[in-house]
Amino acid sequence: MRIISWNVNGYRAAWKKGIADWLGTAKPDILCVQETKAWREQLTEEQINPVGYTGNFSQPERKGYSGVATFSKKAPESVTLGLGIEEFDHEGRVIVTDHGEFLLANIYFPNGKQNKTRLDYKMGFYAATAKVFGDLVRSGRKVIVVGDYNTAHKEIDLEHPKPNEKTSGFLPIEREWIDSFIELGFVDIFRRFNDKPKQYSWWDMRTRARDRNIGWRIDYFFVSENMVDMVADAWILADVMGSDHCPLGLDLNLS
Image (cartoon, rainbow, N blue to C red; front, side, top):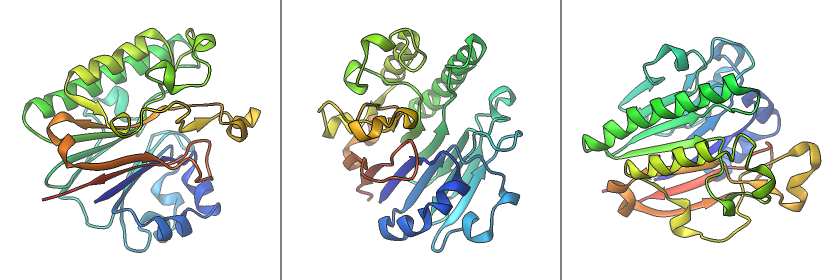
């Protein structure tokens, strides 16, 4: 099974840029999309259910903001929207799909750069995520938590770590949360396959940073330790354009 995740920075904009053609070529079994910035009623039937896929959407109360969608060739056994906490769920940031052998959480984590209130919100969202999916792993479920985490974990994960130590996205408290998430039994699976520097998933488009590969790795597949042996490969698709983020991929060997 191949899973691809991509923060498209606007699903309707991505559609105009040719995401349907890309999807027809890439042909993942599951596509997780973040930052859709769209309600279902703003989309065509083809955008909701692209050819060969069933789409599930978590949309925010506020139009043109946030949102996630998961497109599957085989419909999931069940779909859960949100974390079950209204404070966070009204922003439409979470879809959890059950694929039998594993649960897949597609999440667009909050950005904390705007002000302290949003940073506090981000940290609260982080804590709630850890509780929900940590409990599932402890219960014996196999879990993948994928998406835009809006934090670079280690110095290798961004081009200029020192100047950004006081910037949300690389603050000690944010990086420490990723450490604690790993301690719950999750693995940053990309780093099991690639330990090289300059592996980024987001670039500042205003400064044309992508042209120079001056970026951050803030998009992740975190896989529970009890399913690491199922992972055949994990990679970043840095050459795929259409957003300020690029897609990332995961191959699983299923029984």
